[in-house]
Amino acid sequence: MASCTKLSRNTDPSGCREGSPKDRAEREYRTKRVKDAKNEAQKEIEEYRKQKEEEFKKYETEHKSGNKKAEEEASKDADEKLKGIKDAGAKGGDKVIEDLLRVVMDVEPEVPDRVVAPPA
Image 1 (cartoon, rainbow, N blue to C red):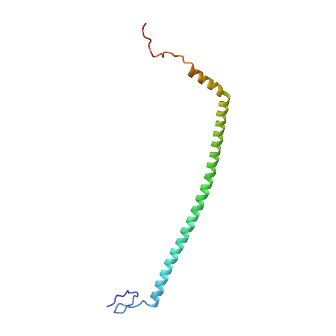
Image 2: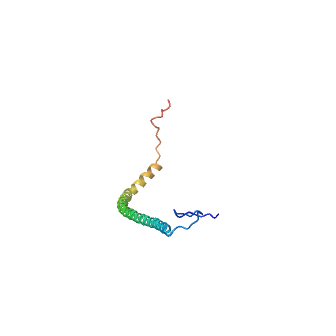
Image 3: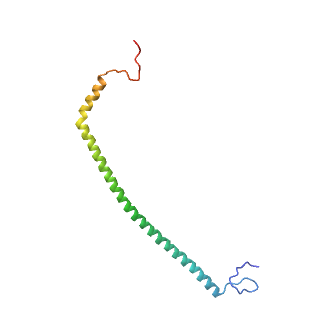
């Protein structure tokens, strides 16, 4: 006996009968509806993905501009401080070098206060 799939509610006693045209039409209709639903769901997923990508790009653009402003302000502050340091170095640099050389070259030994002088 051959193995057959029962496709119809009205089967002959042998159990092997092709589906009736009505059954085939119903099956094709269900298959088409499933495919259509799948395609529609895929389109909705793509639309949602595009929407979220656009929202992310907008968010990223807004926040990048804020970071650039903060970066520019920080750079400007750093440049001003460097200029101040260079100006101070130019004004008092010679005196600082003289004082440093004097302290290193003119040694004046002193006994620390913590050390008790030995009795003489």
